[in-house]
Image 1 (cartoon, rainbow, N blue to C red):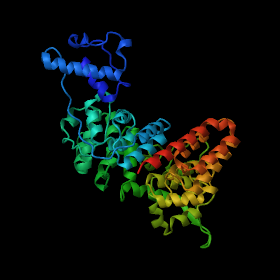
Image 2: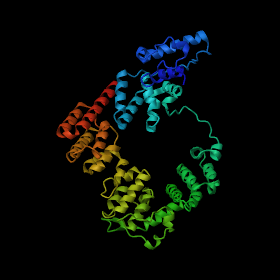
Image 3: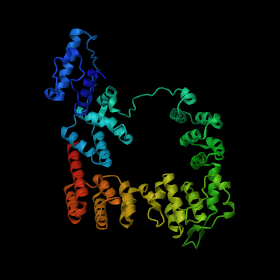
Image 4: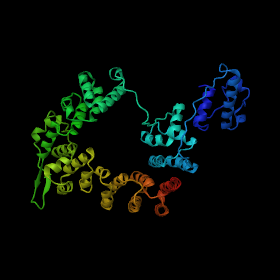
Amino acid sequence: MSTWDEVVSAALVGVRSRPVTAAGADPVIAVHLPDSDAAQGDPADLALQMASLTAAARAACGPESVSAEPIPVAPDDPRGAMPQLVSTYAVRAMEMTPRMAEWCLTLLADSGLRPPATLLPYLLSRTARQATLRPAISTIVGPRGRWLAYQAPELKAVLDDSSLVSAPPDPSAWTHGEPAERVAYLTALRERDPGAARELLAAGWSGESGTDRELLLPIMFRRASLDDETFLEAALDDRRGKVRAVAADVLDRVDGSAHRGRLVQAAVGAMEWVGGESGLVLRSSGLDLDKLGPADSPLARDGINLTTPKGVALQDHVLAQLLSRIPPLHWEQQFGRAPETIVAAIDSDEAAIAQGLCSAAVTFEDRRWATALMTHPGASARVIALADPEAVVRAFPTLAAERQLVGLHALPAPWSDQMARHALRLLDSMLANARVVRGNVLNLFDLMSTGLPATDDFQSMITVVRERHPHATIPCATLSEALRIRSVLIRELP
């Protein structure tokens, strides 16, 4: 990199991040620069001095002596200017926790304001390894940020820009590309033409290595349909276990497939309703173990694991898996009852049924079933994250502490005053039972940094918690600072 390139880089990303010195400067201008670090003074002044001398030398001597190609002018950004105070507090917020950073970036993106030039390098550098932040940062930095990302590749910025139109995929990427290039090509084709992608994959399937088959088959999850059934059924017999598992998972999502029908038939035969009309109970009725033993049984081919974990009965293990692979909506049609009625009828000893339905609700993203299952004693905590937020709020006081944490994570922030008070009571209880602040207690502090309303009342409540639990002084102080920063940003932004 030439001295001129170093000066340009410092001008783009800031002299604090990219300081420049007179060492290595072109002899034409070096004689006019200070010859020691002590004499060079302010690095910003030095950068400007070197730029002006280089420009003057180039005008006088021509490009053969001093190379100084100007960079394109930055485009205009018509948005209103972001207050400097907002920029300062935004940096503080983004340095606290990932949750605070995400909250802050969402707030800045929604504000529609133009960030100061000094903030752009900091924002762009955060996109290199944090993909979840890219959409918000792309919006915040605007046209000048995209210009800077192009001019300063050392920032390694990765921006989401829907205005950029990608060139058509090159077919040679499929025939001669690296594995990642082949995946990208087939993925793009699957989005445009699902049938063509399936036929292309099937045509060379027998010649693909086991590793490549594992890599390529998950693309079939995109826009899966009955048209893919023949190819996927053949993949159920692949000699590689991971390929067979993916094929079964894709077929799970295809309505009307023979695979789905086989799973439903086995699950229906393993459950029964008992009792009178006023007290129906749903329980397992047992499975034919003779048909489940061999590894090459029909259920094993359909992706059911017949090796039981320690302490789990084979029947329960298989039933939970069967139910997890069938959309819960099917059972409404099968039994003619609403989710709440079916869940209420599950025998309290039938953990396999509850667990299987919970997994299915999560896999098939069925909020109605997740809400119905949320308070069942045998339900998995995972369904709380998918359940209806209002139902989570109503049920919150009755949930175990671990489930309350899941619920707080799933609820949109900031929480209502009622929910925030629930969270503080939970924190007080957890701190009373923990001598060291770690694990779930730290998770709760993190959740509250964006969940608690940023008001003086809740600042006072945090002070009470800190006085009651001296071992939590530092996280309480951090939480208080997070609320203060949020209150400033909310007040200063439109």
